[in-house]
Structures are given as structure tokens and as C-alpha cells.
Length: 167
Image 1 (cartoon, rainbow, N blue to C red):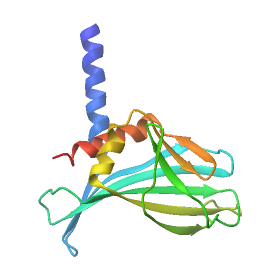
Image 2: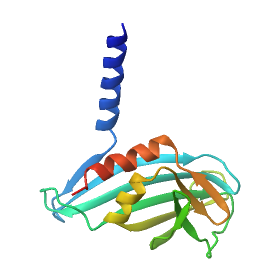
Image 3: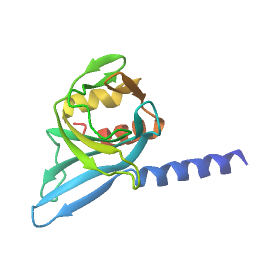
């Protein structure tokens, strides 16, 4: 009985890990992208309606190669009509604030019928820093004065992607 439960658990975990990443080859650009699909980090909290993340990296051609950087995308939906242009976002890695460069863009009308605005933030994280982020015991994202603790699904996605880019 215990053996059956253990084998079922292992099979479920293996199936879940197989679905953690998607790999897509773009023949026109000759680039392969490895992505962890969007993971919801939080529902309604403070001035945010939602926060989700997606992580990806790419390499030239079809032969797997170590990336120089990993793109960590955050998508937020803000319960407001305007974004905060001075929003400062840091990753709290084991309690230590770490800032990464980012590109930000607005998303108009992310929730039908609501006068809210969304924002896409893409953080360009060097590979070595991403591996440190994956090895952290605690991980959170601080957006202004609101802190979002990472959930187990996000941590599993980060660690799974990190396993594929270790030397």
C-alpha cells in the first residue's frame, strides 16, 4: 500500500515537472526559447489585483547552450488608472535586497470592465545571479511598499529552470 502511494506520488511529480517548461524553436530567427509558463504569485493584495511571473531564456540554434542571462517577467494588474513611474522593484533573496535592470511597459485594460491598468516588467538577470536566486531559502518580490512572498509553484519553476542552465 505504502509502495503504491509512493510510486503514484513520484509519477505525479514527474508529470508535473515535465509540464514546468516549454521549449519553442523559431526557425526564422534560428533561436530556441525555454520558458516556464505564467505562474500566479498573488491575487488581490493592497493596490494590486494580481501578480504573475514567467521566466525564460533563449539560445541560438537548436543545440542547447548556457544563456548569459535569464528574463524574469512580472505581470501586475493595478487597481488604478495610472502606473507609478517611480516604482522601485527589488528581489529579496534570503532577506537581502537585490536589484536587476528591467524594461517596463503598460498594458491597457487588462481586466474587462474595470478602469485598471497592467504592467509588464522584464528583469534581465545574469545567469550566475539567477542560480543564486534559485538556491535561496527565501524569495520575495518587493514592489514599492508591498512585498509578495514567492509560492512553492514559483520556486519550483525557478529551480527547475536553473537545473537546466547549471555548468
